[in-house]
Image (cartoon, rainbow, N blue to C red; front, side):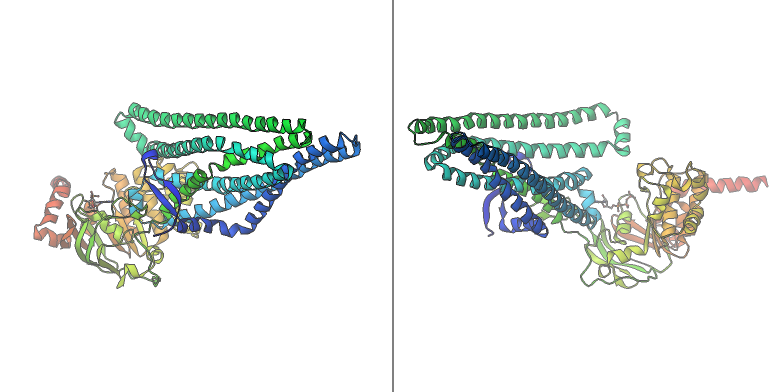
Length: 630
Ligand code: ATP
């Protein structure tokens, strides 16, 4: 069992959420992010110590003014003391600026380290992670939670240190003035310490709920405020209901913020009441002492001035527990992602694939998609595997180097899944996939993917220029190579006709281009990469004859001299394929050439007839008419 501080982490849904103990191990893990900045921390602590020390001196100087300079009519001493008060305030202010600069830099540094670590880690996740997590949630963690780390590092921790040091310095100064008055001052502490603590806890809970509701609001917006979401909501006439849902969430955030602000008001009210009670008692007791001549006026005034220095830090330290808890919870949310082990990892002894011929072999490959992660009882991630049927079952087939393979099968047969396994977007659950005799799991992902090109139905383009989008495949490509690839993909003329040619910026997801144009751009991008193995997911949408022809020509150039695996939707693809792999319900049911498979009269013949029968009949009829008219 790991030791716990009794600090507990509030999990998601606020009040009723289970608390999880924060262990030494977790705290050590948080501290590891702070240690590279230890020289700055030392400097910050020295600054705080200096400021705390200086903070208690002015009241003592006031005492000397009242008890010494004025009664003794010593103008020189008066000037000196007033000058010292002003000087101390200026020096303390300057140290404060230095300390803010240091702590902001450290906070930003830690935040930067974490953000980069998290981004890298998110990049190493397999596709499974992105299909199971909400995009808004991922962005929110990188943005808000990592942002909150800055607040922890440059706010919470510095505040705790400042309050603790101020408290110690003030107590020392008070004791040096009068022991009994100090005892009296401390006696009042519990009366405002307890309410402050309670209010602090309420505020903390509210702030956690606000954060969660806000993340929910952001995720909602991310899903809807983009082209896909907008098209969907307009087409299905959901604009008003979406606005209502948004309003409800937004109101939730607003209400919580109001509650939080009001809880703050309670805190201030409590503090105001009790911070009057302290000085009142001091004046009462101290006043009597002064009347008796046992206490000087200067000491009494200095003591009351020091009281604020005592009560303010005590009030703030009352919430050190919840503040620390909140700070650790921020790290915890980030650790939840960092602890998510990528499903696809390079082996320690993985080799680099330098050259490939392009021979692929599936050996009894079974694959189940990972299920959405659950949070286990101990807060650790558990990526369970779907209990349903696997997407692929005992799939075996071979692709010779340079061969063109078409994948055919009904919807949901597993065609896309096959294409995901080849670049190792996922690893098989059982069986293995070999490339030129190497098990894919024995080579590094990067070197494997270097030899692969993917052209999908839904071409993704970044919101940048056409040139930048093409160069994404090979940043070092020359302008000539770029133009040559675009020419081969039948897209050069189109690009040249754009207002700014290759510098034209394509919209989010390339929405300003037509489907056919985007595809040809994707083909040009793949040509520029010049991979040995190509994975193609042909568009199901039917393009007009000209566009179809342009793409067909471009594809011919692209496929030349490469191993290719195509999810076939075009007649020409199946006719030109060297081999057709027919999948059904995750299994390979037939493999062969078009002619062989037609002769088999199995699923392929059936599918072919249904998908292309009309087209062939139409073509034959057209041919017949042409012959008749000759
Ligand atoms: P289509 O022609 O309709 O695109 P497909 O043959 O490409 O279909 P796949 O996308 O490979 O089929 O899907 C095979 C099976 O795996 C389907 O039953 C599908 O529901 C399931 N599946 C696909 N993606 C996931 C995923 N991310 N998580 C869980 N199951 C999935």
